[in-house]
Image (cartoon, rainbow, N blue to C red; front, side, top):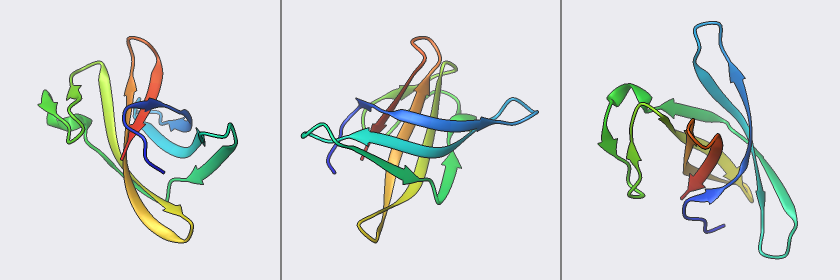
Length: 94
C-alpha cells in the first residue's frame, strides 16, 4: 500500500460537538479491487491551526487532518488522512 494524497472513501462519525471521527477507510488498489480498513486509533491534528503536514499538505481551517492507525496484513500502520471541506473529499497519504 503506497498512496500519496489519494482520494479515498471514509466512513466517519460526527459528534454532537461537531467533531469528526474516522471509522473506516476504503481504498481501491491498482487492479481495481477495494480494501476496507478499520481505524483502530486516531489523533485529531486539526487543533494545531495552520501548519504543514508531513506529506506537504498545508492544514488550514478548511482541512481536517488525522493520523490514523490501521492494520494492513496483520501489521500496524499509521496513515495520514485529511478531509478538505471545500471540495468535500477525503484524502490519504502514508
